[in-house]
Length: 249
Length: 311
Image (cartoon, rainbow over all chains, first blue to last red; front, top):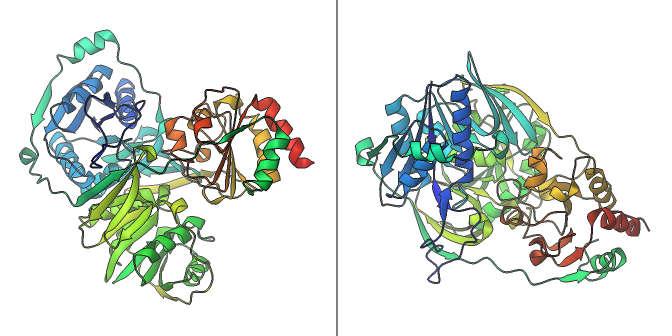
């Protein structure tokens, strides 16, 4: 079995983002970047499937500018076998990204595509679902568990009301939720080894995909700030304020 | 042209978030349809027909839709888009899975989690865990989106007089099989629509200690939530999680107990009307968004608060 893991380069989760003064986006110059945390979980799961003897190869891909290769390299340092970099300077909307992933998945003959459920920059939570629809293959969104079996995969999904179990056929597309696993850190020897692992570079045109965006971002602004609150020193003061000042109880 | 809202329900009850989604739809235009896909969901369809402003309910009542299988619902909605300009669903796990899948089937680029309607093609949505607000203009013929339900007042559940039209089964996926669900049972109000939420974090130390918060929530008539740290540690189930990638809540009163206030948690609760933070670390970031902060050990503070409320 071949597992494909698409990953995204985002502003590091620990950085506090700043809206640009011209309101065109958020400041990304000289800001620390990292692999999207949900993508790390996806890579980890693919590696565990391989380590359990259920997959022969784990391929990490990313679509984006030259720097996206660094994020692929992070996946290789975690233990993935090789990378695919769809190199483009254009901004990519989820539908286009899903079209690119579909092309790579079909070219590689992937039996399972594992994505993070959401990237922490645009917070779209769309690409995996769109990929499954485009491929006409089963979707397992927000999974906290996956097991290979004769019929394909038994998965558990985290849904708003609790947990849900589905059986999905192979090939399949799944998106990783937080409780799927705890990703490993890349060890220094593995970081060194990753430098020698191959990354294929392709363009969207090589994959027969036209980059056609549908959305226009008119502006990006700061959210309204909350006014500073007050400290209370005890239960009676708090209850008094909630009853008489905030009037919420 | 009409606006189609996809109802979320459990075959007997409509989710509260659907009413907020109808309210968002009403800000876009006047001709509102609601699609109900379920099995034995006649009561839900009837309830949708009564929502103020809804003119027609499309009801697919078949075994195919007994469970919310994304594939099945998406193909059904796709078959019912004649005369539809917008498709909206609540930004719950149901809607967040459905809308992108549907959009890809229809060669459309959806937007997620809208928090305001600027015009029929322009919407506001939070990005970066709510640390920025993006205004986006859409160009697709049919505009598809999920709705941040806490950002819109619920539509009136009564007062409408829509018709209910039965629609055909669009067929079930043969590659996805429902196996079972393990749902949290609770008598408390549903987390995303509760008027009061009491949430616990890593500071709770274990699952047993959540009993304190449950008692407090019951006294106040509220729901119980948790930070990601508390869910990851196994104190409480995943459906308690409030945050960027969990549930978004905006109750009248949010009481954060033993929660430090990581960015991803704040993203899920900072639109609450009144925020109370109880934490023994005076440097905890949660105090920066709290209206009332109480720098105290939670094992002292929560019983004291309970006693004060019990009078």
